[in-house]
Structure formats: C-alpha cells, structure tokens
Image 1 (cartoon, rainbow, N blue to C red):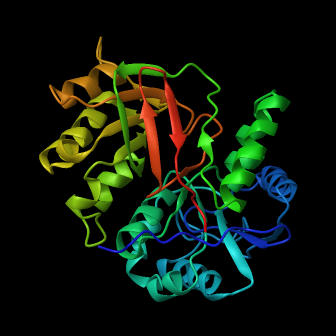
Image 2 (cartoon, rainbow, N blue to C red):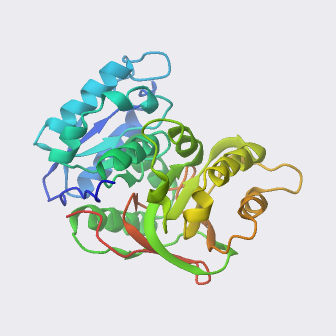
Length: 323
C-alpha cells in the first residue's frame, strides 16, 4: 500500500495549467473560462490554458481521444515548470486512459490535480496507485468561473479564495472548513480518518477496475460523496454495492454533499436511502455539506485526515494537504 504522497506547496507566481482531462469546452463557455482563470490568478498563480481547452477540439463527448488526453496530462505531469493542474470541467472519459497515465511522473514530482465529477475518478485512481493527494475541488470553468460568480455573495467568495489559497500553499493543517448552508446531522457521532471519495457513481465504477482502492484503504476512513442527475433508487443501488464490497463496514464516518437533480421516490429521499443502507452501523453521517455539482465546492484533499463531528455539524482538515 503506497504511503500518502503530498504535492509540494504552491508558491506565489507558480504556473498552474487549466486543461481538459475529460469533457470539452462548449461554444459560449469562453467567458466562464476567462473568469475561472482570473480567480486562479487572484490566488497568486500564473495561469496557462492548454490547447485542449478549445471548442474546436472534440471527439464525441470528450476533448480528445483517450491517447490524446493521456499524452496531454502526462506532458503536464512531467513538466517541472507546471506546479498544479486544474480541470476546466468534468465529463465521462477519464476511465478511458487510466492505464496510460505516467505513474512514475506522479511519484517523481507530485502535483495537485483539482476537479470534481469525473475528475474524482482520476484522483482516486492516482491515490490508489501512488498515494497522491488529489483535490476534490472546483473546476475552472463551471466552478471558479461559474458557481463562484453566481453566488451573489462577495464575502463567501473571499472566504473560499482564502481557504483554497491556504490549502494549496501552506504546509499546515487548514482546520475547520467554513459552512455556507445548513449542514444536517443524519446520524450523530464523531470520527477522524483519511478523506476518501468523490462522485458516487465514479467511485463505484472505479472499484470494478484494477485501479480500485484496496479494501484496507477504507479502514477508518471518512467517506465523502455526492451525486448528480440520478434517481434515488440508483443511489441506493450504488450504496448497496459499497455495502456488499465491505466498504461500509470499514469506514469511520460518512459525509454527503449537496445533491443535484437526485429525484426522490415517493417518501424516500437521499437521507432515507443512506440510513436504510447503513442499517445498524454506528457511524456518524453529516449531510448537505458544501460540495457537489450545484454549489461552490469546499476543497477536500483525498487521503488527508479529517475530523467529522456530526453533532456539531463540522468538518475539519487536521493535517496538511501539501508539503
């Protein structure tokens, strides 16, 4: 089992590259991308946009073929000038090139990879194989350039800007993550353990491949997940898959993000489904936490220890995400 591999802390002026490791840039999204670049620059970084982020580049639902996407990512991983990689959006394609990623380049020069949705599959796979701390965090176009600007809340944007900057540049525990909405106690209790998770459907998909997280990696973990555009019965099925694989018997706590278009089935909503699958397992569950497809995301570094207090409705990062 690989040891945790923290990326080097970013410094002011470091080069961050926005790329398209999954979906393509859609026509008309250029202003959102420009706003996302400006937000990254406000964090103090130099930003370069990859040629892959171009509405003219597309292959079906992706920014390129799996080989092209892997070649682009590998080039960034090998380039010593590039200090972080930010996905412009999610999509449906990272599983197509996991076997082409240069894992030796990851180990030789670990860098933060930021994104959510389909990017969570990439980060989980790299964590499984190398121990890399990846970041379930906002996307450049639809996050920094979209959700952050639709908030209508400059104070929250400033709070997030400060948090992301500290998480990426300070080799110290960031501490308490600032809630924006009303987090919910779905089951009381406290837990501390490494964060593991992402988009639920991608986690379950990854676990059917050779890049799956070994069962023992879930021992004592705080599992976090969110879901988008799926009926609640499909979520129930994915959670049952985690139950059957033994994951739910190993974790110490559960954190559920804000769902997006997860439709209930009669009286069965997301909370009811989660508690139904957990059964009598005595683990704390915190719901409606600020990450997912419909709100600015709190940065959640995969593999970094977190403390969950469902009674107080808090989540804290208790060790550094970078070195």
